[in-house]
Length: 626
Image (cartoon, rainbow, N blue to C red; front, side, top):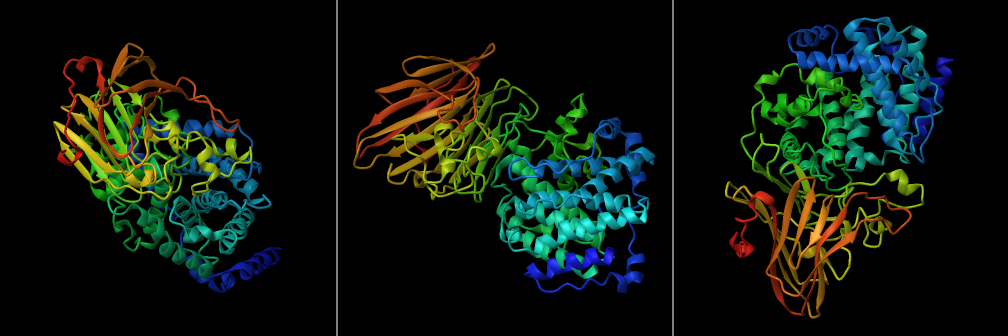
């Protein structure tokens, strides 16, 4: 039976392989196989004691360990994962398989309790029986393979021979072989998160079964080492992740899972962690989290920030515990159950075991800027004060993966309130179920009819009610971390091609008190209507050249300087299309102004917390002199 199953899988692989033949020489390598011990992925046999010592000595890690065990108890009461697609995806089931198996395998290794092993084995065998792991959406295969590989490797010595056989055959036939099919493996030439996730998943599968399939495993590992460079190159030059905070949590975390595993098994990641910008990306993630704990949520991104296990790997690699300042704040939360939705959470016990939490110091810099495909700058007045002023600003292009028409957008916090926000992402399934094609990047793509993705919902200039230009790109031209005037400036003219001759935007925190947004534009040979707006959850009261924003008992004043004949306005954020998501409790606020043809115009908007209302003054200083 085993030989027939493997022959079918082998023929499938031979048919679709674009990488040449792989000889299944399991029977010819038994001596080599016996010399390779399990577990070998992430945590070697015997290394459990280091985590046990950590749990015994540090109440925070003891609490995290207990949260994982408590979640395992909840998993015990559930039925094994079933093969049920949502739209075209099996991904939520793949993620749940990975989460359950990782948690249960960790619990068994740390406690030795049979109940965790039995439940993990049931999960592994149930998934092994699936007809396939949905290779048409290969992320599903990648995450399922990673979960199966961790379970197979970590529980190997305990698994009965027939269970091992079923699980390993599933890893090979439903995970590894399909990755050679050109219909599915486009991720190998991609530079986005698919490359990182899929290469990581395939590598875990290869590492798990390498003694039985040495040639196949080696080919997959070699392929991953070569092609993952494409996605790691996206962090250049400074560490910005083009897809934003949420997808950093996806792509970067799986990239770290890959690097951590190959270094453990092979003794080296062949210098991949030294890729320009990669280790620096930890500083990007540290700064992209605001004092409120929310993130600068540009692109397809949610608003909430959360604990990132991968940051503990970065901190250890960089020998810089201060990178964990924000992560340590999350660890002050009294309810650790909020972390247990993270399928990679047990890795934090591995990556965090050598970093004393009491050595995590305040970061030395309050501002950070990075160039790249989607440049951003973040600045704040304090790391310790939750009422600090925070300003996040982005340049870039709508054409990046998961990008929005948000070039020149910003978010702003003060007094513990997010005043200028971002609508963030909309569920893909909610759009795809209505027949929307949501990943096109051409100027006329359906993606740009979606409210949350086009510029009408972002904190940008909109000219003549037109869309920003997808082909445009803006870098950050000037940046300063001076305490009395932190700022960033970007020439964003290219995203307004044929609408404006020139558009330059600067954003700044002045005197640690309030925010200034300055725009300098030149109109073409026709008059234009300019809309300046921010997306906010505040209630709004309009005046002649200002607006008062209120959230609870907090107020922010929006003051316009340098323009005449403007009209202060609010715009509804309610959907006008049946596919658009609701945006309850939000509104756009700003102004519209007609600007004549062939005119240069500069104007400033001050965003002033109530307590500084009497001291805030316009800069009246050109961006070239910032």
